[in-house]
Each structure stands twice: as structure tokens, then as C-alpha cells.
Image (cartoon, rainbow over all chains, first blue to last red; front, side, top):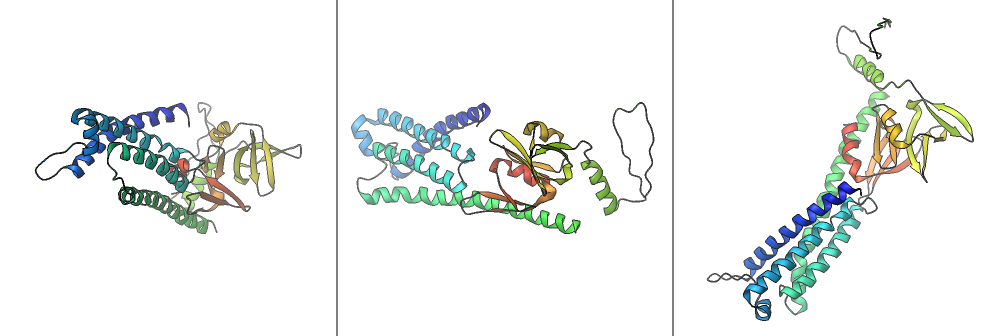
Length: 156
Length: 144
């Protein structure tokens, strides 16, 4: 990657931080709130730090996870890695950050069932990402091969 | 077909005008051939012998271990010019497929991709190589 690519990746990672803050806070609110009360942070985090500080910590940690998730998309731009390798690298890095953040912020329950529930959705999303990238290249290749066939039959 | 020559001392480049009753496939092919015509051949070394390579005969040009090579059906030749310079001098039918390789699009047989997402290109002369993902759009643009 050249300097322009690195600058682009850094910009994307900063955008990732902002997206991480928004998504982390919004998703927590969505899952923790009840019909009569808006809840912004998990109970365990609130017990440890108090509501305001817990919200600040949650926003910062979510931002860091977002930064890591976006920055690790660098793997897709690195030609040494195939699409599946890039997806696996991105998944391992991002999921590790997400699990650590999830335990710290009280998003994941203490038992194995909680962790499993937490992992299922991202795994489905990663499979869909890999499949959509794979299919987009497959379609391009199919179009190119059809065009090559036409060109070559025209020559003969 | 008649071929005429008109001298124009005020002109600083060669201009070819194709005159025909209508635009047929033959005319189109003729114009494409003229567009792709490149007068100066590339010089390459094989076993220390300098050979002039017609650009139409080149299958691919690639760099390996800081050296540039051109593959033809007759063999591989060492080229003294850097790849970026050659890219500017080559006709339109040559397309870059990675940082280290340019191929003659007329010599491409097919492309393929495995489940891991590695894109392979198959060229005349049983040559097989890898297409970089970031150059796929360029390859598509050149061939479609």
C-alpha cells in the first residue's frame, strides 16, 4: 500500500470510530431498553461506574472497536490475502475486539450461551460479506469470459 | 482495397483516414488494427542474443526479481526497459493485471477464480498467472 492508500485507510478508521460510537450506543439502547424506560448502558457497567461515566466509557470502547473493525478492512486491500483469508483475518481481529469489549461493557452474559448468542449474528454477517464479494468477482469473470469467447470466435 | 499516401508537411503525426461506402465489420476491424498498430518493436535478450519482438507476438510482460521479461510463443526474453515505461509505449490491447504484470488481451483465453478468491488468468502458450483484485475493473473495462 502506498501513502495515499494509508491515508485513506486512516480516514476510514476514524470514520469507523464515529460509526462504532453510534452503533455501540444505539444497539445497547435497543437491546437494554424496556417499553417504559430508556436504558443507555448495561446494568453491570452502570453499577461499576455510574450512569454518566459508564456511557462515556461505553462510547469510547465502542469507538475503539469501530476503529479496529474499519482499519482491519486493510486485509481486503492486501493482495497477499485471498478474499477468504482477508475475511477470516478481519473476522478474527474484529471479533476478538468485540468479545473483549462485550465482556467489559456487560454486553455478553457470563455463561457460554451468552457468548454463543453474541457470536452467531456476526458469523452470519461475515459469511454474507464473503459470499457477496465472491459472487461480485464471479459475475465480473463470467462477463469477461463471455466477451473473450465472442472475441476469439470472431477471430477464427 | 486501395492504399494511398498523401504527404502533408504541416502535419506532426501520421493520420490515417479510412474511406468506405459504409461502416462494416471489416472496416471496424481494419480501424481497430490500425489503432493498435505500434511501429517500434520491443527489443529483448534471449541467451545473450538481442531480438526485436513484434508487439503482437508478446503474450505478457512481467517483472520478476527486479528484472523485466516478455513471454512470446517462441520463448522468454529479458527486457531492459522498466515495466511502467513499457506500459506507456504498448498499444491499447495490453492491459495491466497486477503491479508486476501486463498482458496482451488478444492472448487471453479465460479467467477463473477458486473458492479462496484467487483469480487466475490463462494465456496462450499454456501460460497461467494471477490477476490482482485491484486491477479487475481495468481488465473488465479493457475486455468488455
